[in-house]
Length: 481
Image (tube, rainbow, N blue to C red; front, side):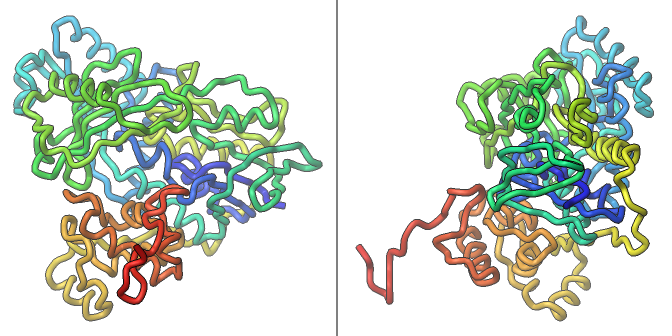
């Protein structure tokens, strides 16, 4: 029997696993998809919010500010791409200026450091591309941008290194009480565990209902984005928000840690994980973003995508043990600022387990830390030394992003290895550039097949069913057609 089973390995499940891996316990992660961070975590705004949005006194408020501080430490320790660039909330009308003051007061109550309300002139001095209609802005220097899937992956890798078991393609379809814990039904049979952490994202209410009727309701909400080429990456140097509304924090314009420009999202309730992009949704994003930064060149868009977040029917996170199901811990409704709060949310789960007397002693031989080689960021001397040691780093596979074979091999043989083309993309960056894998995709497929012994016909682009190849067209130099 396991001590703890974590259902879901998005950033919340990953953070919980990372926190629990410090203790001498038997922990398993049950992830329904074929990779970690493959739902909400991979398709969001990639913002670590400063913490002025949540109402004072809520879990969101407390855990947002704590989580951002922890994230900075974790990203440095685990070599995750991170940049503390700060954020600006714009008032684009005189009527919105009081709302800036409201956010400032929220942030002050929540403990957000070093905020300041700027005049129009101060805002334009910081960001010359802003609309001339800006009347003022709230400056929050503690906000940051991050690589969200690398963040989750890095925490999972360290957890696995320290003994946490990860099962992918392992959807939980039922749960029942047994003496001393729970029996979870999974494709391979059952998993028995003393405690459960429900970090199932947009499915958290349905997972909860396997043991007790849920007293919360998840409202899956789609957000659509434009990802623009690096030629637009310096259009702004801070995260640019408009005043939030009932639909969320609104359409933002932000640099990414990879040097691109990200624009979005809208907010559209959907059924399940519907990540379709729509012409109306993208037009709304474009038109709204141009209110903040009119000069964005959307002709430089290299990809549009959508993610689905777990909005709730209450305006706070759901964190705690189900009263009628001892040992069942919900970490649910992790809409924004869920990414920001993740490590602090994990601390809450650990505290609950400590109160239950479940956690063992801290491990004396715990192995923390991580190094991720980004070849293009090395000095000429470092590159030469690495190629001498490992020649695969001297072969560039992705020309757009200068990603080498060595980086792809590292992704295929890590603690949580990639098994799909997009899995390699998320770990190594191959396919993230202008051509979006048009050049390097076939070579990545070849490397996956060679290194992992997978038939090319069985290699996936991303999720199950997304086979890249469906049949051989030539055998022995002769066409099958």
